[in-house]
Every structure is written in structure tokens, then in C-alpha cells.
Image 1 (cartoon, rainbow, N blue to C red):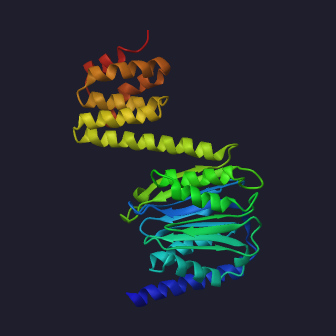
Image 2 (cartoon, one colour):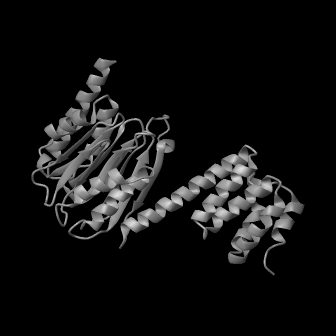
Image 3 (cartoon, one colour):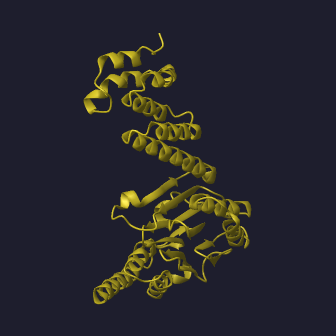
Length: 331
């Protein structure tokens, strides 16, 4: 097994060296500030970033459940994300992975990279030619890094904010980004932001292991927009848990989850609609009617959808019940 892993690592590095020789002129100037971090209680790992650059999340943020997380920025080389995760997945620590990739990179002086592995080892690199202000701080289970900043206070403010913050990993990483912006942020301004969080251990189903993956591609206030999306994401998490509770005939738990979801996202008619449908399927028709009435009064298309659902198995095929639901359609 060790020989097999060593072979994988050698192939990865060989591929990277070849990449560097062929693509040494490939530079994307994604100057930014970011954080990589690991929640010591849950094992979850993540990356959060903001930049004055379009779609920053498509280049900077990388993470894999049970492996680690990577932020690659400055004159960004996305291969640090892909190959960093490959190396950590093959058993290298974050430090070993980053050292190997830097050693093979002719453009290392303009790179800024941070990595964290599933065991909490953290490594960071700020090339000597990164545009000032530029720097990083490696802390306990996190690293903050920034370049092309208005001043040299940014990464220190991020570190302090993260260490004193509370809440889940998303809350704490957002606190670090907020602190960066409050301290001056990117000298050019702001444009896009992203957050990516994965589980601490892999289930073998990458789509299920990504706890949160949100991007603001272009916005005048990307951090506030990202925070809005996080709130919506959490609302849908409650909604999904409510649906699962209905499947297990736990109506009380379902109602609590649906209530929490709608409190977080009160203007979302679709969330209310599926809540009402779930109540009907749980033989709670009377409780569903006030919800349907509100929905139909705001958008009649939802009333048109109701009779289509039985054929898809999403609603009881009961003509009397369907007529009762549609009886609350505004006249």
C-alpha cells in the first residue's frame, strides 16, 4: 500500500512539473483575502473568500471531505487546489503537500496558497513578489491570507476575528471576511465572494459530503449577498429535515422544521407550498388550507400545479381532497 501511494505521489508531482513547464505563463491575477479552516468539534473543513475579481470561487476555493481544503490566490494557479487535495488524500500533511508543490513551481514567488488537512495541520505560503500589502497568519486549525490589500492590517484582523468568533464554521469564516473588509480590504474594492464547506469524513458520495457551496459571482456588496445565501441555504436545510420527518411520520418534528425554515425565509412561496403538500399527505388537510390560501392569493400558478402532483406520486390521488385544497383559491 505504501509503495502504491508513493507511486501516486510521484506521478502527481511529475504531472505538476510538466504543467509548470508548459503553462508557466498562465497567471490569473486573483488578488484577494481568504480563510481556510477546520471545525475541531465536527471535523468540517472549509474555505471562504472575497475579491475584486469576477467569480472568485471558481478558482480559489477547493475542498474534499476527509482530505482537506485549499485556497489558491494571488497570480492563481488552480493546480494547487487539485494537486494539493490529491497529495493530502494520498497521505501527505498539508505542509508536505504545499512544500512539494512550491518546490515544483517556477512561479512560486507570485503565488499565495493555504492548505489544511483533515487532521488539522495547516500550511501557508506568500510569495515574495505578491503585491503588497500581502501576508498570512497560520493559527490553530486555520490560516488567513491576503494580498493586494489596502494596508497590512487585514490578515491580523481576520485572525483576531476568527479566534474570538462563535457559531458554526460558516459563521466563523464569515466573521473573518467581515473583519478583512472592515480593516480596509482589497485596495481595488469588492466584487465576488464564495464559501465551500465539506464534511470531516468522506461517505464516498462527494455530492452529499459538500455541506455548503455558495458563490456570489458579481455584486456591489458580495459579503452581504453571500450572507443572504447562507441564510437561505440554512432555511432549506430545515425544510429538508422537515420532509424527512414527514417520511418517518414524525409530524411534530416536521412542523418545527418547517416553521424554522419559513421564519428564516418568509417570502418563499415554494417552501410554504411543499410544507402544505406534506401536511396533506400526512392527513392534516385542515392545517394545510390556511397555507394554501396564502400561497394562492399571491400566485395562482401554484393552484394549477396541485392537480398535476398525484401522477408523480407527490400527492394523494384523492379527488375530494384536491377539490378541498382548491376551494381556497381566491374568487
